[in-house]
Length: 127
Image 1 (cartoon, rainbow, N blue to C red):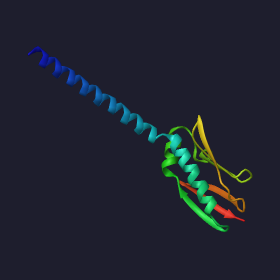
Image 2: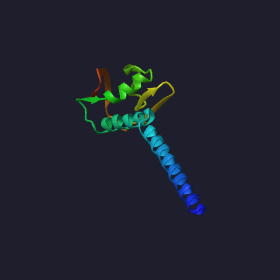
Image 3: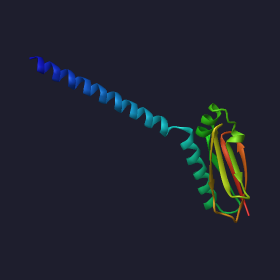
C-alpha cells in the first residue's frame, strides 16, 4: 500500500512541474512576441517595402498608433521614432532608448518627404 502512495505522489509532482514549466515557456514566448524589438523590425520592413513599391507623385498615410504608443511608454517621442534617410535609402525605427532597427529600400528613383501627423506617418513620394 505504501508503494501506491509513492507512485501517486511522484505523478502529482511530475504533473505540477510540467504545468509550471510550460506556463513559464508560454509566458516567455508571449513577452518576446510582443516586445518592442519585433515591432521595430516589422515597422521598418513594412515602410521600406511600401517605399519600394510606390510610384512618384504618391502620398501615403501609414497608421503607426500601436507602435507609437509602445515607443512613448519607453520614452521615445513620435518625432524620434521614425527617420527616413534619402541619401542612404534607409528607414530607421527607434522604439526604445537602447535599440533601433534600420532597413534599406532599393527604389533609388524617388525621394521621400515624410512627416508625422498624429498617429500617421505621411510619405510623399517625389521624383
